[in-house]
Structures are given as structure tokens and as C-alpha cells.
Amino acid sequence: MLDATLTQQLKAYLVNIREPIELVASLGDDAKSRELNDLLNEIAALSDKVSVTTGADKRVPSFMIRRTGTDIGVRFAGLPMGHEFTSLVLALLQVGGHPSKAAQDLIEQVKGLDGDFAFETYFSLSCQNCPDVVQALNLMSVLNPRISHVAIDGALFKEEVDARKVMAVPTIFLNGEPFGSGRMELEQIVAKIDSGAATRAAEKIKAQEPFEVLIVGGGPAGAAAAIYAARKGIRTGVAAERFGGQVLDTMAIENFISVNHTEGPKLAAALEAHVKDYDVEIMNLQRATKLIPARTEGGYHEVVLDNGASLKGRTLILSTGARWRQMGVPGEDEYRNKGVAYCPHCDGPLFKGKRVAVIGGGNSGVEAAIDLAGIVAHVTLIEFDSQLRADAVLQRKLASLPNVKIITSALTSKVDGNGERVTGLSYKDRNSGTEHDIALEGIFVQIGLVPNTEWLKDAVALSPRGEIEIDARGETSVPGVFAAGDCTTVPYKQIVIAMGAGSTAGLSAFDYLIRLPASEEAAQAA
Image 1: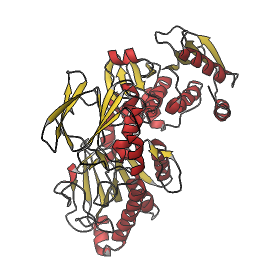
Image 2 (image 1 turned 180 degrees about the vertical axis):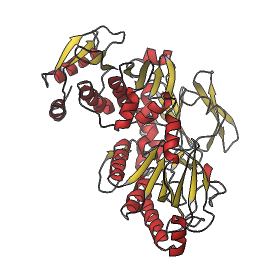
Image 3 (image 1 turned 90 degrees about the vertical axis):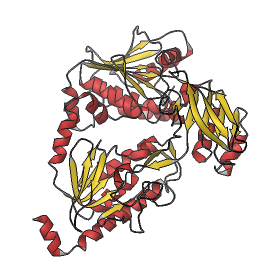
Image 4 (image 1 turned 135 degrees about the vertical axis):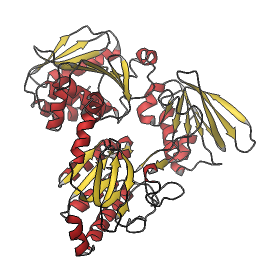
């Protein structure tokens, strides 16, 4: 199961196990059970602190990693390879007593949770968002004896997935009831079940002194702005709804200059680590709802947060990014995560052998159709324009696939369903005006981005598309307020461009501060 490189790496990691652990396997006579048996025995052969025993769990194949002589452990139903291999390694180490790198106050918060929490997470091996959820819940089950977690490969347990109507990953159940869907980090999960977490976070934020540079948004633009501002030695803070932004949802990144290939979550983690090298106050899981500009130039701008607290900054850098654009048709919201999906890499395996549609003929849409064609029975790609807009090399690849149909000049008008899941869609032929229906089980929407700027209406000048209008220095219509990244009018929404724009905004904010009249600055400090 493990090649020589992985074997060597895993052996080096397992040296960190402090307490003996058991791999309790529940196996059958099927091929996957045999693969799992081979994997567990290969792992056990790498450390004298790891042994394999037999169990009898209801899910086959599955295994529990258990600290010998205790109830401390985590369970995997399936083979945690692919994106979940890191989850397996961390589980081995943490059950074996190796300390987590999570923040100590967050660890204590998990230990103090009062209640019995039985979590189940459905994942797919191709999902880049799933490991964060699996690893967070695994850690929680190690830290708190009243928390348990089993991570389930949805592609391997199809009957269970269908029975529980799981149509997106990661999907989390708590004590048998739906808990959440989509990427969630440890801090988010804990905040959701700790009733007092939001209040404590708000109180902590209220105690913050004003910042010289306050950045709203923690994607590539926000991270770059924070680093450049902090290097100038000025008080810098970042308030982010989720640090990393949409990069966390990006599968493969192959155009980040000097790095041939990386993945979004890996890059996001590197961004956060780099920012933390400096004296920057990071306030994660904070959604901005209102901007109150300073009354006078050089005064403090105020950002009101969803939890009722607010932050102030002498200068402000808006880098709230963008999100996937929705079709805005009847049935889309109703069947979101019930057949309507936005991540083909994450959710594609759940539609194996089924008929799906991809909405959008740009690079993202065509790449999604190509990827899905290798999994599903049939793909219908629907494009509003009279021709596809993807790169020629992608169009040639798409045209070579036998189970793909391309429909252009088509306006999707409705998502159809039976109350539980998608059953089809309707579209209008823009040339003839005729309506058509397509029977299918899944719809993957890939039609571009919309800026996260609704909260800024009437505060700064926005373009007709809702983008923050900026000049070459990143300045907005409000003195002392700058902006960068995908939420702005800068052309070409790319990671490297966002980083450059964030750096520009950070330097511009510093330049603005040092040019403030000394008397004004003294008055504000008083």
C-alpha cells in the first residue's frame, strides 16, 4: 500500500509516538478489507509501539486507532489515503500521546466542553476541504473523553450515503443529526458547540486598542498587506471570516510563480504561518457587517462585526475577496448540497455512475467537466455564450471525451427536484427561445465570482458589479481606506495579483500614516 518514500516518512513520524496504540481492524472478505489489512500491518511494522488487533464494528472495512488500555481513540471507515493520509498520520501521533500544535487556549476549550458528542464525517479521498474537518474532530476526540469521531469514506459506503441523503462532502453528523457541511476548522467547530464562545470572542475584541493598520480579510491580499504593514513596525490587525479565504477551496495551483504545483490549503497554511512570524493580531471567524468611515482625515475608521463588537483602525485595508457566483434561479438554494454543488473535486465522487451538468464554459467549467467525466456516467456542459471561453487546450480535451455533451447559447432557468434531491434542470435556448428539460442527479455551478462587498454599500464607491473602486495605489474613495484583491476593480483575479495588490495597499497605508500632520496625529493619540 505504501511506496518506499511514504514508508520512510511515516517511520520517521512514528518515532514521536509516546504511548502504545492498537489498530483495531473490522474486516470482511472484500478487496478493500484486504487492502486495509495490508496497510495496517505495514504501519505496525514500522514501530514497536503499534500493534494490530481484530474488532467487530458495524462498518466494514474500518479500524480504530486506540491508545492501549484506554478509550481514547478515533475511527476511520475506509482507507484514509489520498488527501486523508495526513489525517491518518496525525491521528496515529495524537492518539499515541504526541501533543497537538493547536493553540493552547483552544485545546483547553475543547477539554472543557460539557456534553456527549458523537461525530460522524463523510469525506471523499479527492476532497481538499475534508482533511481540516476530519483532523479537527479527531483531535477533539483525543482531548475530550466525551467526544467520539468516525471519518467515513462516502464513496465506499454508498448505501449509507444515499440513506442519509449525503450529497456533498465534508458532511458532519452530531449525535445522529446533521451538524454542518463544507470546510470547517477546529476553531469553527468548537465555537458552534460552545454556546459561550461568541460572547467571549466579542468581549476580547472589544478590549482591543485601535490599530494603525486594520485589515479586513485573510486571503492572499490580506496576508500580504499584513506582512508589509507589520514590517514597518506599526500596530497591525487582521479580522477574517476564515483565514486563507477562497484559496482554501482551490484544488491545484500551477501558476504560482516559482512553485510548479501546490494546493490551496497548503498555501493558506503557509500564508498564516508567515503572517504569524510578525507582530500581527489575527482575529479569525469574524465577519464584518458595517463600515463607519472616520469623520476627519486621520481619524479612526470603525468596522462593526457580526457578533456586535467593533474594531478601529487609523487606516483600513479591505481584502474580503470573492465567492462562487450562484445562478440565481428557482430551486438552486433549495437543493444546495442536495445535488447542487460548487466543488467538483470534493463532491464529484458522490455522483459516480450518475448524470450531471456543469454550468459554465470558462476554464473552471471545462476543467470540472473533464474531471467529472472520469467519474460520472454523463456530463452536460451548459454555456450561456455562443461559444466556450476556456483555453483551447482544455476545449480539445473536452471534445475528445465520449460521455460529454456541450450546449451553448443556453440560459439555465430552473433546478428541478423531488423535495429531497435534484432530478433535473430546465434551460432556455437563447437562439430559438424554446425551453428544454434535462434529467440528471447533480449540477456543478462554475460561473465565476462575486465580490464580498455587500456590507460596504454606501460606505465606499463600488462599481456596477459591486467591486471596490481603487486607483493604482489601492486607494478607495475614502481617505485612509485602501483595498486589494478579488473584491476590487483590479483586472484578472489571480493569487499572485492579489498578493501584489495587498503589498501595494500595505505600503500605501504606511505612506498615508507618515504623511499625516503631526498635530492631527497627536490629537488622535490623546
